[in-house]
Image (tube, rainbow, N blue to C red):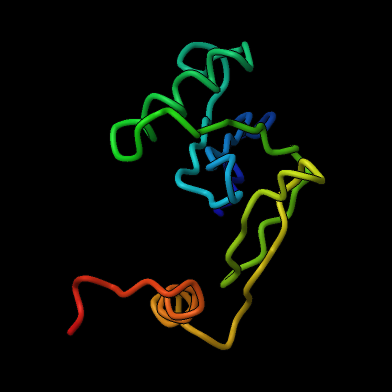
Length: 120
């Protein structure tokens, strides 16, 4: 994820992050970041969750989607894929550097017995 640091005097803009995941397997389908101070940044967690879920639902439907709010001190590592551990109720890394994202996804599809329809 991206960290924002203001070059202006005063406090950095507030950053809030929601993750939308599939409750069946913890697969993350959408990250939604909110950045700003005051107007334009919903104060209520419920409103931020609604916005994130609305965006994700355009591509994934709503039936099995859930939202979690990422703690402000959570450190997303570069070149790392995450999922939501539904039993522990937290984000966990499941693959790190050494492979590109398409390679990791291809391995996951092969492991799960699914083919990428775009490739022959």
